[in-house]
Image 1 (cartoon, rainbow, N blue to C red):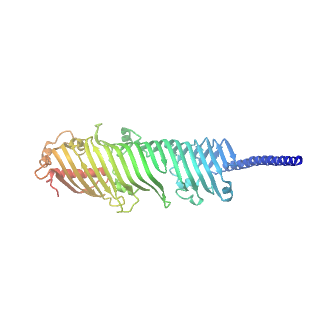
Image 2: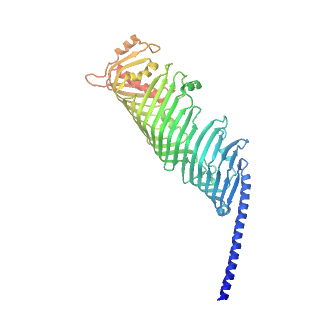
Image 3: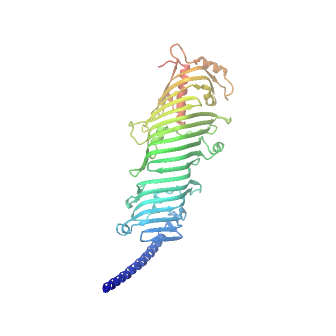
Amino acid sequence: MIAYLYVMDKRLKKGFIIGLFALIFFIISTLVINVIVKNKLVRGINNFSETIKIEYQGVHVNSLTGSVVLVHPKILVYGSTTSNINLQIELEKLSINNLSYWDYFFDDKINVKSISFDQPKTIYHHNSLVSLKSSRDSFDGASRKDIEIGAIKVINGHLSVFDLANDSLLLKSEEINARVNMVVIKKSSLEHKIPFTFQDYLLTYNNLFYQLSDYENLFIKQAHFNMDFYKIKNLSIKTKYSKEALSKQIAVERDHFDLNIDSLIIKNHDFGVKNDSVFYFKSDQIDFYQPKLIIHRDKLVADNFNYKSLYSKILRNFNFGISLSKVYLNNATVVYTEKVNEDPKGGRLEFSNLNAEINNLSNTYKHGETKTSVHIDAIFMKNTPLKVDWNFDVMDTNDEFIFKAVIGTLDANHMNQFMEPNLNIRLNGKINKNYFTISGNDHTSRIDLKLHYDDFDIVILKKGGEEKNKLLSGLINLFVSKDSQNKSNTFRYGHGKDIERDKTKSVFNYLWLNIKAGLLNAMTGDGKEN
């Protein structure tokens, strides 16, 4: 028994010693491998690319888990033909977790569980003269392997984009948090417009600024994007100049914008690149909540005689595919003001409590397959109910449309702020009900109208718009029925055809030309239905 215990004790000691040596060997081997991997990684970072330089304060490597952490790294991307820094990213740390050595050495691909960018501060200098392909070429040679990443995470990032030409701010956002899962980049897809695929994503950011144009800026207070819906809060588009300053900046008319949207939600969406050529975006439903649009036009600035497309043509000529099944405007307000003389008040049109449903807002279907329809309920000028039904085929190159409206009780004086300065006409009286249908295309149209009105009077003004031209006013009112009522019918009918569109003016001017023709025919004609 004693001999047996002695043998067992000897074996245990031997096993312990072997295990201890194995553990020491394992630890030393791990440390050596860590050093080797770290040195190789450092050499790789230092010689990553001629146009990409990576600086850092420290590198931590764990060869057992395949993890690498760069402490306070700075990534600098230079122009391929200049020494200018196009992109700069500074981070608290960059973490690469669970790199598969087997895939790297034997399957010719990089397989990583996750990559985390902690508090990245990104500054990009955009050069409008450099094409997307040239930008891609600056990264050419950075990797010749297929890449699979379980998740890419951005934690509390900041982004600033500047115009390289004048150093003006183009885009800025704060508190960016993002996660993209199952990212795959194939060597064969690097030339594609979108060179990677992904499973799903989540993106949130605050306080976004974007320069839409030389005159307008876009602001978003808060945004939340994922695979199911987009939600944006406090979106606004504003002209960067005051009304007076804008008039001094422009050579021809340009509207001054002030758009505010409390929130918008985009549901069941999808996007991508069709046939690797055309970008597309589609959604089952978009809701805009409490949008308020204030437009001001200074008519004292020279007219802009450029061709103005109808909405169908604008949609048809988008350089990307859009397909929105339903778009809702909820409790919207639209205010249009116009300055036609030195009077600071100017003319004003207002639509409030506006609710609209837009169906099939799309440029992806075939001609004749379906139509875009717009249904609007609103209050015009504080107390006049308005209903509109409007439809057109986006893919119809003739741009044919039908526009129907029903207008409730309207004090004609509400229109005088526009009639007087533009037409030297003042209206007195009240329109109790007005129905009209306009059908037309990009060139001409016709209107069929019926209305009920009381005690109507047309005053022709002298040049300058202040004094009444008694002679012309008396003559025209000889032909105008004072009210619409007669023995046979309470409505008077008006018609107009071959009404030519002024293609240097907007679709709303086109509608106004039709309404004016219908009203004049109803009041000065026989008032009978054709």
